[in-house]
Image (tube, rainbow, N blue to C red; front, side):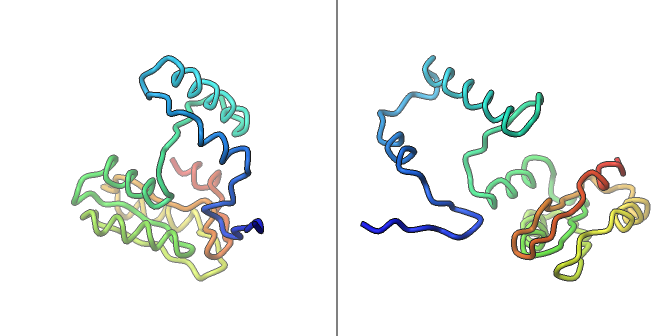
Length: 154
């Protein structure tokens, strides 16, 4: 059989050893063996990510994680800012609007990163804003936003 490669940001091709590991018997999520596997994976993820902070493993697609952040952190009627530099920023805005949030959308031309000063002005004009959504790297455009610069606004 010919090996196939997926040349997309996700899902990705799965190495054979990982596929074989999936053939093992299931471990109940409340069993001590599962707790140990989760502890090992979390410790390794902290090393890979270079953090001492908590690591959350979220079993979902990217869109599922986006939707979860909207519905678990906000209530219908809340005002949020969505910064869009491509498809995934637009997707965040659509999810937020569908949930009933009041969305202030800051859109940028394809290929251009977001400007932190625009967000600063928007937050000054809308002090009742409950949250901000920004995509770090929008794979639809290849644009990377400077999260450190946006973080300095808080």
